[in-house]
Amino acid sequence: EADIYQTPRYLVIGTGKKITLECSQTMGHDKMYWYQQDPGMELHLIHYSYGVNSTEKGDLSSESTVSRIRTEHFPLTLESARPSHTSQYLCASSVRLAGEGNIQYFGAGTRLSVL
Amino acid sequence: AQSVAQPEDQVNVAEGNPLTVKCTYSVSGNPYLFWYVQYPNRGLQFLLKYITGDNLVKGSYGFEAEFNKSQTSFHLKKPSALVSDSALYFCAVRPSGYSTLTFGKGTMLLVSP
Image (cartoon, rainbow over all chains, first blue to last red; front, side):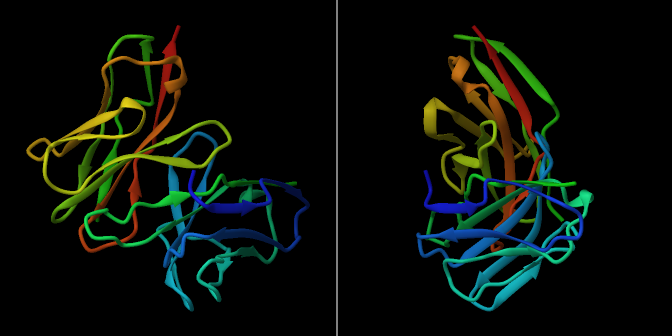
């Protein structure tokens, strides 16, 4: 198991609430990623970061925002949750090592339900 | 832009039989290819990768994958399936020089006793 942690694991909230999904890794990886995944479906990259103070949008447009103030922490925030945000959110991290191919390691995910 | 195709939504195999989960890719330049497995209510676990070198790569839990450049394929294989191998399998690709991965839509593997 990789040392990457997501909290909460499950979250049920009402429409309009502001939420922050936490992701932390203790491996010292410089690169971190957020994916959105509907149950049993493909992953879509929504945000990524190459290091502190670096954030980029991914392939799938998302109303969420991210920040990277510390290497180990990459939280995702929804200012006003809507039912369309119901999904599973997966966080991952990686580091470029020669010959290793920049393997991404994943957290267990946060399953979000917006009522 | 790169893409990954996993043509089978589901693969069914009996325990003890060999299994193959198919993956084809499209990428500019040399591909870095990966297989991940996802168990219910869990994140993805890395299984194996192809970077360069031997076309047959071995990974975790007895899985292996064969890289075929001419067919742009990277099929996942195991000689003898276990019931515990039942899970969702994802193939992913990234071009050399990039960090972001492109995933296939996943293939559900069901191994029956």
